[in-house]
Length: 294
Figure (cartoon, rainbow, N blue to C red):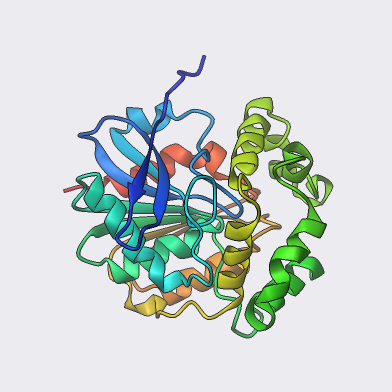
């Protein structure tokens, strides 16, 4: 039987008047991980069994990006601006150095922090992460709809938010949104999505992500369609890549590109695993980070 782990939620006030929502799990004196959710996502995103993080001695802080959940929007935000917000969150919570963990759309945000906050980030892990698409073959394997969204994100950003409303409403129909395209996923992902506890958490997360509309979601799409604004080769801390070789949402070539571009990289490509591999591989992901705790 899984242990129920309650979150401590709160708001961090920033100097520009915005606030960021967060949810925290584990002991206050645990080794800290700042976790960056997927796209769309919110502070409600978590593993079905957060006791795994506690058993690893981790203090996990899920930081909600601007425009999602209770976090203030930041129109036109850029990926390279995210580390400044994360640094403010860490300061407010009394965290000096920390690991970063990004899943799916959270992966680029984790790597931005590893690049910009090199004095504070001691290690990072990205799971099923996106990679830059502004490179030859960068959009290979993506659906035509996703390709169109990323193209608009770079060339016609004003069209992204109204277009997302046409795709689906994660607040009014979160379960339908969570399970869309299910039949196109690989065997491993379909098995994960048969677990009621996983779907229940996804529904809660997506509903909260769109609490005040799709601003956060649209801004993420725009960010992913543009150049990231920093060099992956300039990341110095250890980075662990975890990617399924049957990921049909963030194709495996994305993980391979990250692994080739990041110097201090340890890549794990899991045979048969899909996009939701974190559900079954969280202990290994945590262990890869824990070994770097001072």
